Length: 505
Image (cartoon, rainbow, N blue to C red; front, side, top):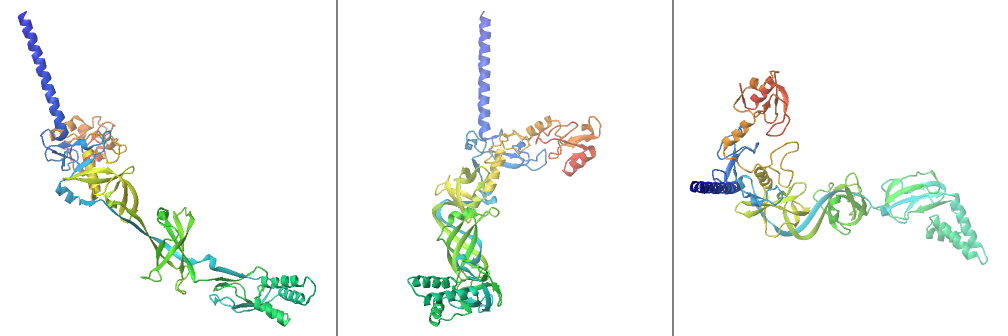
């Protein structure tokens, strides 16, 4: 009985001792997985093409023969809970110099926007006039007989014979010589008819005094301007409404600029601008916006902006081409260099310098772009330091460490590729990596014997066109990248291996 009790106690003690050892080993492994490799170092070596290959000492990749690169192990507590995106990257001083990382201190600046738009000069529509015939007749003489003639109000334009005009003169004289109570109304009606035909007050007064009907009358210009087009000739018959002259006052011109629809918020009526014309290089002309057109061009996505400008005595002419320079100040706001922002599609990220070589990924909300800087609406505060240049290299460093793209939650694998998600846990040594590869029979290493691989002796094998040393005698997928194996002849497989640096028997 005593022996049985002793044996039972010994068994219990052995069991408790075994449980103690297992618990201690589990804690040791857990601690080691957090911040170091099996050798206790805070760095490891990996292949940039095959991140699953990890070693604690220098060497070459057993898959592609590329030299392994040194990577430092960072604390994984920098990750956001529930995501796979790395939130902090540590770069040593030498790495910052090699990556050309420069630091920018976030500060408030005057948000000054200046942009240039293509523009051209045109006639001011309100200053264009058409002189048309107000009655039927024949033009006897034209005084303004050349396109480009400058005319002024009151200058003779043409002399015309018109039966309608002769009849209107007779009606006026008859009304003047009449008597009775309605004489005054008849005279006023006849005088009004002559005015509508285009006679001046001087011509009507002369008719009233001379009592003589003229067979031809001279038509005087009612406007100032330049003859743009002469549509009649001497001796030509014209009907009521026919155009005789097209004239325009060129003392004021329109400047039409076409701006991008994204810039419309910076323009309003009254905004000033500077005009640069190709005809006068080095000269600058000033103006103000008078009208913003209501429609956006659906092809060019631009909007027309109209302003009025002096022709400076004819120096500026319609259809001259130039550039309109607009500027606007939005006030004070936080800014960062445009190169500091990384666009991931769903997020806008900047890398914030936390000191001692640590850079933290920070989501920001962007406003407008002002030259080579972006306005920051949220995500940063004044005094924060960000990586002004080299941000893409820091982002690449984070991708290599996590095996996935920062800002994407797609598991870090390329579409169509069955890449492993967890590449951060380092293997104990290179031998462990080789053993894992050897365990997968179609990943070949050393001197590759294609004849031995061709088990069915049909002269064909299946090969991966990304990892050339993955070869099988059966259809399947590559265990490294997930690509479907392609069928090739033994000679084709041999040539592919030789071209990519592998040894073949």
